[in-house]
Amino acid sequence: MNSTKYILGIFDDPDDMMKGIDNLKEKGISIYDVFTPMPIHGIENKLGIKESRLPIAAFIFGCTGCTVAFCMLYYMLVHDWPMNIGGKPHFAVPDFVPICFEWTVLFSSFGMVFTYFYSNHLFPGRTPRVMDLRATDDRFVIAINAKTNYDHNQIDSVLKSAGAVEIKHNDRKYISYE
Image 1 (cartoon, rainbow, N blue to C red):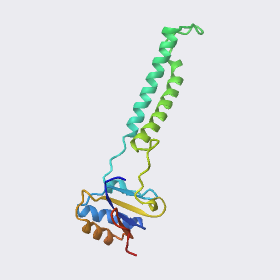
Image 2 (cartoon, one colour):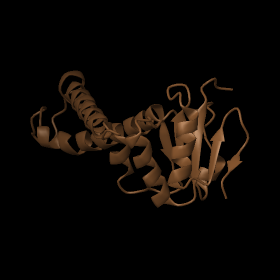
Image 3 (spheres, rainbow, N blue to C red):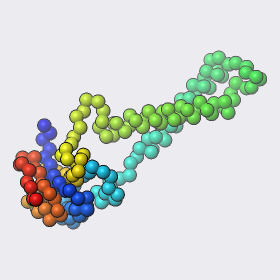
Image 4 (cartoon, rainbow, N blue to C red):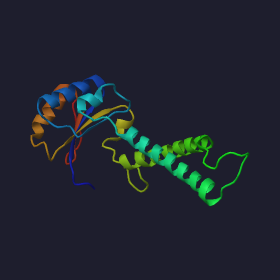
């Protein structure tokens, strides 16, 4: 079991959860992560999440694929086995375009799959970290790192005033406010 402990504020309404995020930010309490069963517009800006750098990785993988295809074709058709096909020169760049395009798409797609799995820790053999199973069904969960935020009673009161249905601590059982 992981030694890091979290305080979980569990909400049944996304508006209450957004209000809870605002209240926690006002009090200077840092939020570890938020788990929702559906996408919520504008939550990235509230949490201060930076824009993804995956498009840059896709561009780099695409450039690599195009370069590999071009170098491979140049080597095979000009140096290794030059053939006279219809009187065309050996280094006919327009003939290289379709294959370079296909390799660009191939390298980008496979590279993005591996980059996505690596960046989200979805590689085989890793057990997923789910804070609360109800976050995949019908609850909205705010996770707060208990080791960096010391005043747990203040966190509990802020979450309760924001409309949390439950507050869960790792070392305590569920606390219900219904």
